[in-house]
Every structure is written in C-alpha cells, then in structure tokens.
Amino acid sequence: MTPSLDQLDLQLLQALQLDGRAPFSRIAAALGVSDQTVARRFRRLHTKVGLRVLGMADESRLGRSNWFVRLQCTPDMAERLADALARRPDTSYVALISGGSEVVCAMKPRSHTVRDELLLGRLPRTQRVIGFSAHCLLHRFYGGRLGWLQKVNALTTEQEAALRPPPVEAAPGTVTIDDTDEELLAALFRDGRAGLAELQTACGQSEDVVRRRLDRLRDSGVLYFAVQYSPEHLGHEVGALLWLTVAPSALAEVGNALAEHAEVEFAAAATGRVNIIAAVRCRGTEELYAYLNDKIGALDGIRTVETALILRQIKQLALAPGAVPD
Image (cartoon, rainbow, N blue to C red; front, side):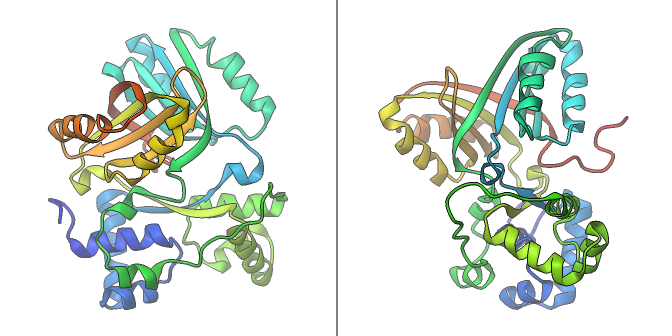
C-alpha cells in the first residue's frame, strides 16, 4: 500500500508491466475483479499517475547501440538543453541532476551517422556546455523489458503465472525490419494497447497482416511493452543515479547483484571511466543512505561510487502530452 495507490492499483500496474497488451478480461480474471473495474482503474491511473503503455523496440535486436550521455552546463542552460533533448524521438530518458547544472540523457541513435553527428558534433559544441561524456551501454543487467514495477510484489505467484506472456526465445543475431514494421512500431509507441483496427489504419495494411507482423516483432524480441508512470505516487520520491567503477573480474557479479536489489530500476555495463551505470528509487534520503551503506557497500569489487540525486525527470520513456511546451 502507498499513500496514493491501493493494492488493486499496484496489482494492475504490475500486471501491465508483465504484459502491456493483456486484455482487461484476462487481468480481471487473474485479480478476481470485473472487467469494468479494471477498465475504470486503468482510466483513473492514466489521469492520476500518468499511466501509459508503450510499445518499445529493443535496439540491440536491430543492431543499434544505446548511449548514456552526461552534459555539464551553466545553470541557465541546463533546463533548455534538457527540454530540447526530450523533444527528440531518439531519446528515452532525460533528467536534471547535480543542483540543476547537469543533464543526463539516454539516447538510441538510429544510425552511425546520427550517432556521430550528435556525439562528436552537436552536443559537445552546444553553447554553455562545459563538460561532456558519452557511455555506450554494453550489457543491460536490469531495465528495458524488465521494469521496476515487477519488483513491487503486488501479485501472488499464481497471478503472475496467469498474466506472464510466453518467454521470448529469439534466434541469435540481428533482426531486419521494413518500413511497415517501422510504422507499426511507431503506432505502438504512441499507444501500446492500440487495437488491431487502429494499427491497421496507421500502417495501411489488413488486420491479418498487422496481427502477423505484431506477433513476429514480439517473437523475435524486437518489440516489448513498458509502463510509464510517476513513481512518486508509489511513495518512492527520491531517485538517484549511480556511476560505479568495478573491478573487471567482478563486473558480472556486481551487475547481477544490482538487478536483484528492490531499489534498482536500471543497471547496465558501460564504456568509459566508470563501467556500471545504475538508477535507483527510494522512499527518502535516509533509505538511499541505507541502500548505499548496506547493499552497495557489501558488494565486493566496487572501487568507487558517484551518486547524484535526480532533481527533475523530464522524460521517462516518452514525453507526456504537454510536458515540454514549444
């Protein structure tokens, strides 16, 4: 239970994290309530906590890389730069940290040309940017299709089993997609629960074609569904980013341990002077201190830790309507 949400709200959020396109009837049967109750709660959570289900592309399955960028700027520039980055379709996370003078951004450039133009050209030369670092994400320990809502433990083991979709057993190697697939992914990113008729209109294809392509994108591991929401309503008001320097021999052990921590919503091995980047969510600064002291401090192989509070998260996965004014 949280101050803002009750147990059924949390169960619905976790159910959607397990399968964002699960029919309300299946969710209702697993939770022991009516379809109408689930639909009402969904609409209420959309209004109250900004709930959205988004279809996401796993860039690694498409042979693309993900980057995490830090930009130190003068205080008068940080917010404008963050807003500009948030408007870009190839960013998935933008936040202000470090007293409001630093912007962090997760980027997924669609080509080497776009990557080089951003990382070697535009961003380092942006006016009043006084520091810049870019980290390529090499391996994700937690995040992506594994969302933090899966750690709220609102569902029983039996409920999870009833709601969890079949595991993805994708063939090794990259997947090639065409323009119709791209249109389908774009429509699902706007609304991960869009019906087949709506997707048909967006793609200009028959419902049978849309259904087959949707299944292929999911089965190949390209498409997964994520839940966007405001974590403050779950009582976790303090977010922080951690940059860890870990002995190479302990990299996998530390990363896998982080993935098991209830506080961790993202953890990945990365290039650069630090080799693990993590995002955590706590109920307060004392809980964050306890996490750093008790859990991070207990892991062998960690040499240094840099911690920065997230002052304002401007973009989580996608911009909420009206979040950043023109």
